[in-house]
Length: 105
Image 1 (cartoon, rainbow, N blue to C red):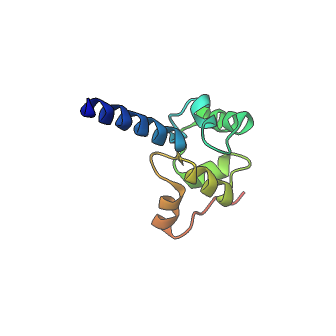
Image 2: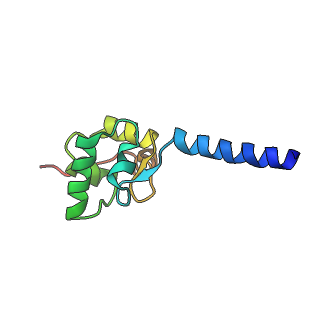
């Protein structure tokens, strides 16, 4: 009986943890999965998906260059809420190169 209770609690905690931080990779996520990330609504997910149709995102700099409305502060917020680009968080991208550089227009 005690083992059954432990298993139920373990499953419940796993589900709770999964819903607290919605992890989604911008190159793989559906519109619903993107919108599960705090701060991403229908308009932003639509922009992301439209750009992704043209070509997959290479990195966070590519996202910030191609998706209108996503700059460093927004990328930081989305990353903290669980959005990744090819499995990398924005903090990892910044840490790898010191700063994220975007192409000049």
